[in-house]
Length: 161
Image (cartoon, rainbow, N blue to C red; front, side, top):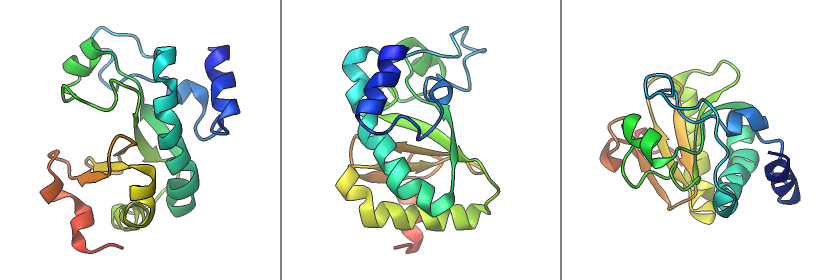
């Protein structure tokens, strides 16, 4: 864990979210009989750097501090958690997040969609929305989707820019 912490510090993304949150696996860890925390393989650490940079430079200025609920998921846990077979979580490009403070869903969507439209292409950011205030950010391709996983249902299609 110390080498992972040092790696993040070297990339200037060590304090975007607390390390213990970054190594959370899945909200389904109990049901899946999996570990609650897991450090991604070292060969995948570089993948999360761009995602953390987007959160640090774009998400947090737009909505405030965030809490990471899920980061890396090994393939077994990803499957049990109903993750897509090619989920960005499997290669440690992704995090599922919630705002740390109170924010109305409409404001959350508007602010995140604006940040994504303006700077998402530069970071190769995927932005997905779940129900409530939970959302997904990754850096494995510029795209967006709604709670059913389809781009056509992204709340960002409402003209936020």
